[in-house]
Amino acid sequence: MMYDDMIVFTANDLKEWMNEFHMGPKALCNLLGVTYSCVLYWLQGKRKIPQTTIKLLLYFRRYPQRMFDF
Image (cartoon, rainbow, N blue to C red; front, side, top):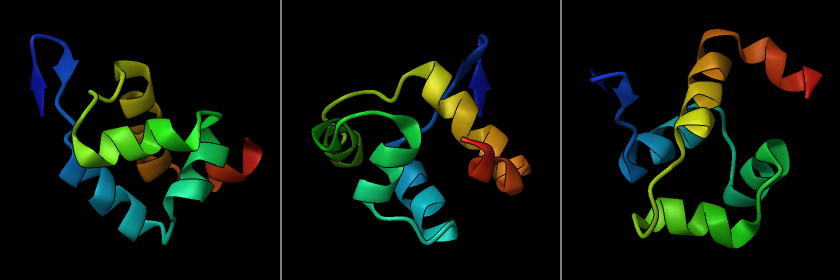
């Protein structure tokens, strides 16, 4: 969802995205180039997921074959 150009993407949304692509936290951190603890904080809701990361995840949802280009 969008509110004032901000995309809302919760920890549950991230879990759904990971399930959709059969991806664990380790694979996600490798894909995004972030630390494992960063992904865990997002999954636990301790930190907000950055807008650029959300946009990239939504891009991958729309064009999943592009994940292999990274």
